[in-house]
Length: 328
Image: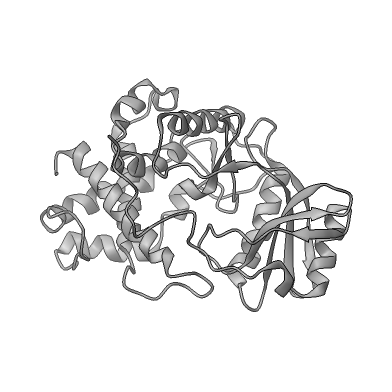
């Protein structure tokens, strides 16, 4: 029997977003202009994600529905930039990738507006079911096939470059030196194995690959539609890297809920030829990243649920890595 998702993180309810009626009139007008028809009615804003920017479904006067995102540069600078990046990525994704349709995007005064096609679906992982696991795997396979090699028209960084982060280096150094103070709820072996964890994580600097990588694939960045197919959303962290990387990022929470991920990896074409040490390096570096700044306030514009998510991810990634390395 699968264990339930820990009560401290319900990915269906992690954000605190404004409602459509509270947005400036010029944003309403911009959504209608970009969508090709004025907005007739808006559904409640979604409660997923970790920011306070607007995101929700609206019905247009011509009867169509679209999904709109909007962020003010003054209040949500991070999301403001992320929407521009997502629009750029969606416009350049190769055909066949399970991503939402880009309907339109643009600026309205100091606001950035993004309009997408609607995907009728639900978040997986509450808890992960066998069908949801297969749907997520199939989506990652489709992405890897269509996104390898990465199109030359899409200029993005690398996963190794993204992981060259001062916060990761600082936490890894403390683990290596034995000065890291583990937050509550972490595995008992963390202090003893800290130097080894830091050593394995250092291998992430050598991660390389020619595939497009979503870079932030979590349960709340997936939607499983009524036919059972999974769609990938929120495309603002795209880089290049190994084709197995995105699916690997989902595995620790699956394992946390009792899914036999080693069997899953053994039969998945995504891991054909993959170096187990590189897989462990990715798991380790994400664990180290999630251990960083756990007790700090959330970044501006983000909700407290971000730190709860971070704590759960640290525990899940450490648990999976500990099993693979024989540390647990």
